[in-house]
Image 1 (cartoon, rainbow, N blue to C red):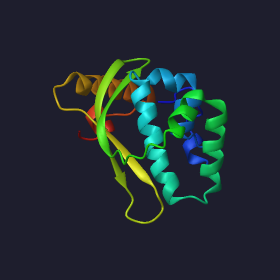
Image 2 (image 1 turned 60 degrees about the vertical axis):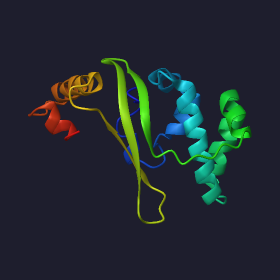
Image 3 (image 1 turned 180 degrees about the vertical axis):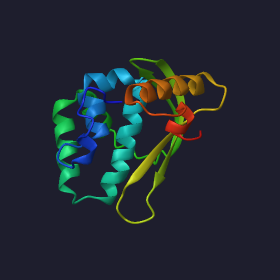
Length: 157
């Protein structure tokens, strides 16, 4: 999703990219979503839900403040007060190297109170999305020198 950012950034909390921040303020990320308006609405609805549970979180307050000031789209959506717990659905993505991807997603929440979530993308075997994921896995394996198939690299779908 963010090939233009430092690959190791997720390993460093101070440099870790925030997907909602990137969605609204990073042109590369905006181009990644075929249906950006749908993704933006889903992100704001989810962020509203999280904000209700973490009203005293200074990082969340800072994120919402920055997005409200810097993104007209975010500000408009936020002012509508949407609250939706979107834990599954379909995303329509545009990868710069392999093209369009239509993938199902599911969000798994950590059972503790950390608020951590895992986002999983899958595609039905034999579908165009599945074939495109296979191609993407092959490209990653080729570049990294990873032995084995793209299925081993990506895991089963």
